[in-house]
Amino acid sequence: MVKERARILVVGGGYVGMYTALRLQRKLKAELRRGETEITVVTPDPYMTYQPFLPEAAAGSISPRHVVVPLRRVLDRCQVVVGEAESVDHARRTAAVTTLATEEEGRGARLFHYDDLVLAPGSVSRVLPVPGLADHGIGFKTVEEAIGLRNHVIEQMDIASSTRDPALRDAALTFVFVGGGYAGVEALGELENMARYAARYYHNVAPDDMKWILVEATDRVLPEVGAELGRYTVSELRRRNIDVRLGTRLESCADRVAVLSDGSRFPTRTVVWTAGVRPHPVLDATDLPRTDHGRLKCTAQLSIEGTTHAWAAGDAAAVPDVTADEPGRTCAPNAQHALRQARVLGDNIAHALRGEPLETYAHRYAGSVASLGHHQGVAQVYGRRLKGYPAWFMHRAYHLSRVPTVNRKARVLAEWVLAGLFKREIVSLGSLEHPRAEFELAAGGKPSPEPPHNPKGSS
Image (cartoon, rainbow, N blue to C red):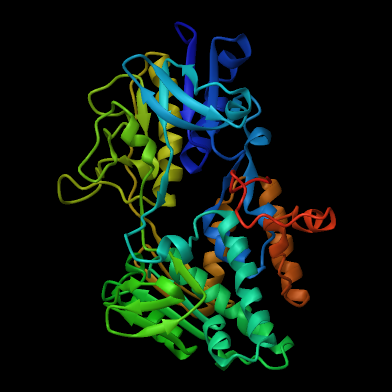
């Protein structure tokens, strides 16, 4: 029995936020029914994005609607508030949140009072001060960015097919990806495969006309799968005429020219930035202890050090790895740890409310899987290394088993089956990013060149 009414505030609707709230729904079902507990989830989007499927969504293998999980359907016993947490004052047990109605109402941020806090805002792209990057770079962390990149790549092929300017054609068919981690390698592999397939429908664009360049500052790609599979990945990408530049940095992309640290210059209209992540900026506006790298200091029970009734997990949390041989090591900020931490976190909050002993998070890393495009992949699972089709199949099987809800599993599996029976879709729907442009022209106005105030919604 919960001794007193508890208000639980979950900041973030990603892996940790959704799975923690889902776990609490199940563990505190009786308390929620009696009104002894309430759970509020504050999230910038009303859905959770399953990020491992973003490359396949960008390549058109999966519908973007099936890469996301609607939170209100899954968290039917929680209050879901679409908004951004601006600050957290844990000493006063309050969080300042701006919602979609805040600006319309003309009021300041709304204060949410809580008894227990789960801080799981995740991470954002780690952007370096590279000249021109803010103006021309494209991220790859959200479903909007993934579909926008797909539309952009097909649009560049359309430009190259219709122009008579050889310089413009060359720039349109040059695609630079910065970052050799999961996001960069998988996005490059899937999109190159998609563009190679689409080229057969262009009378004057051949696959060999396109330049695909992967820029990585270190001497290896996909460090999570090990050195041997990293070398295999580089060999496989180069076999597909992809230019892999190891030990190289992007110095500038101003004026639509990618300048690399080895002196190379590539006129390009596409620079995809996937060079790492950093903790969410909301952590800067809290009174909670953090590490030198900006992550929240956590205990092995997933509570925040030096505080009570404050919890964290996932990318924003530095959780001690109790299974590591060397002391002081923390769990890697990846989806595998986030999913497992969320279950322990939900259980521990329920234990704390009931005065029960807490569990310790202990999980050895099982391995990694990565896709390099259609029927190609690499995997290292419990020390065993796989390449090619077996690794690609394991990649799909693993993520199909991990994507939330039976509804999404069935829809993704159905799309994969249909993709094997029919031809790949190569349609660009870039006009969706500015849906009112056609009406504004019809009404005698001019389409606004500026994006709407809310980059994820309509103007």
